[in-house]
Amino acid sequence: MAKIGLFDLEKHFAFYGAYHSNPVNVFIHMLFVWPILFTALVMLYFTPPLLNLTLPHSLILNYGFLFTVIYAGFYVCLDLKAGSVAGLLCFLCWVSGSFLAHHLGFSLAWKVVLAAQLFCWTGQFIGHGVFEKRAPALLDNLAQAFLMAPFFVLLEALEMGVGYEPYPGFHARVKAKVNEDIKEWKDKKQKKIS
Image (cartoon, rainbow, N blue to C red):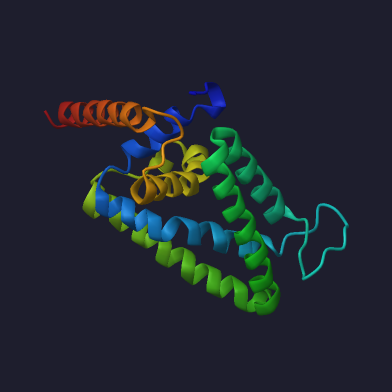
């Protein structure tokens, strides 16, 4: 069943999908989006604790944990099944990112994160510039692009891999919205040229 407002998965997916319709660009994003989230959580390990609770194995309830809860909760609200998978992946990224950050220490972790972020972001910008030929979604809606990117690529993978749909007709409705948005964008682009 379709939801509305902040939890309107069709709207979010169509917005993001309109910027990711080229199969090569989608594949590039599938490779690089989750590593960007993971390495961001590695750096957030070094933020101060929000709660002074002692957790095992160097886990700290800090901003990395807070962002993980927000992302996971949002994904579950969008779609219970795929959102639960995405939420689990978010928590796995937080836990493993925390272990890695603790093991590396700040002086090495930030260098590893910087290298990984530069590599992943460069790949994504190449995907947009060379294959999509459209600016990334983050230039039009930064918050939505960052929040939806991991879930978008997971839903794409689930659709391709097992034919998953949040509900019957979801992909057909989203595809129609994406095609409409792309046509509108091309028409605006053409008017600017003429």
